[in-house]
Length: 237
Length: 353
Image 1 (cartoon, rainbow over the protein chains, first blue to last red):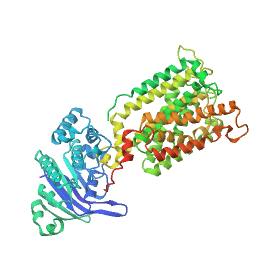
Image 2 (tube, one colour):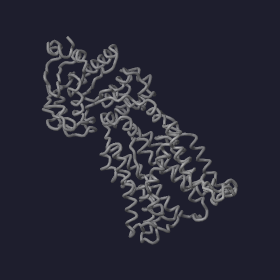
Image 3 (cartoon, one colour):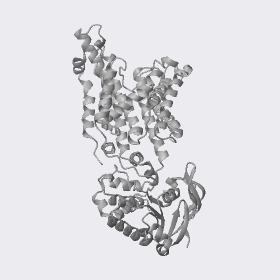
Image 4 (cartoon, each protein chain N blue to C red):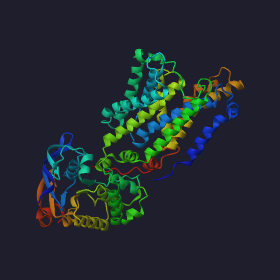
């Protein structure tokens, strides 16, 4: 299967410090791939360098057959790579509707945007109910839904989710992961970054374990879920 | 947050249009000073345009800009140099005003392109520096700018088919400045509700999230700089012709930039109506109320030779006190933008990357 997204020996960091050392990751079309690891392992940096917000120091990122390593962030979104960032990062003073419109910022097909907006409201009815309220007034779970819906408004080929379970009640986490599974059934490829390794590996097809900026394990999600080292380090057993 | 075009602004505009039609009113209430209110208002209108311009960068986009006066000056000198009879250009005021707007916009791009690589305080310092550089350039290029004394005299605008007395009657400039203000106000009203306007607010709220959404943040910030500079240059061009002179480099100094910023902060960052109120209060206090109070004190014969005989001599104390009180009691400004008000009340929890 051709890889939709492929990171090859990616090195990136901040100031004098390299946060990623030769990270190689692939996501194929239609796949959910989980990237798990502890705090500070480089998960978010990986996503940020895919998005072009953090610049790679060496190595390559290719997406949909194109080298996007040096591409500016706004052009990468146009290619069909959208992200729901860590901590949700919705625009708290823009309304829910305006938040969603910001997600479609790079698009100029008005009809398509209207269709996708309707889809988002069908997927998350609460967002329709509250569409004229400032995003900051939503609950944490609703904000996460908004962040996912906003990313989907870019009509991406690959959706990247950074810690969608962060700070949410277990029940809401289940709901969010159900949405991820549903999206995947419609053909959406997903790169899922999570500290909640158990939830992430349950929905994912494959997984990578990141430790201090290096990929230390890569396997099918089910195998990782039963791997004794993963169980000891990330599943608390 | 959709709202219809504010009806109060239509009422205010109508009142301002009607005001000069009642000259008795103007003379009756303000004959305590040598100049009438009608003479002072055009200056206030132009200042309001300048404040609305600064609001684009500072209020909408959330970048601190301390050099707005430079662009006002660039507009004023462009019109001055192009229209003054001492120069060979002899371009009409209207064409020169258009050129001034374009030149100031380009100057804004020129400053913004390198400066916007900086963030926060560093950006503010560069804009401050730019303001001073422009002032000193004007001062030290007498071959073009006439140095400290300014380009003068400047001819009055020519309206085809109409003869108006621009020199002794205040009304032509009153209507010109009012029309320019109304145009700016409407332009910004539309801009605020456009995709561009929303993008600026998104950048102010969370620049990282905005770039994750595919917003080209550097280009959008540059656009804000250019719009601010262009409108400021537009106001400057009218100002120079109204004064029949570019006045001189000191009219575009750092104090003016800070004064405009104070109007924004007092009225409410990001809120067009707040900005107008801020200008009305501060400019009105400084240029209209202070002279009136001076007139009253002198006419009453009180305090001959005392320090407080000249109220305008210590108006800056009042000015400073008011600003301190506003900052303490109402940091969001008098007529805040509802979004900015929220921002100050509930700062969002910081989240790491």
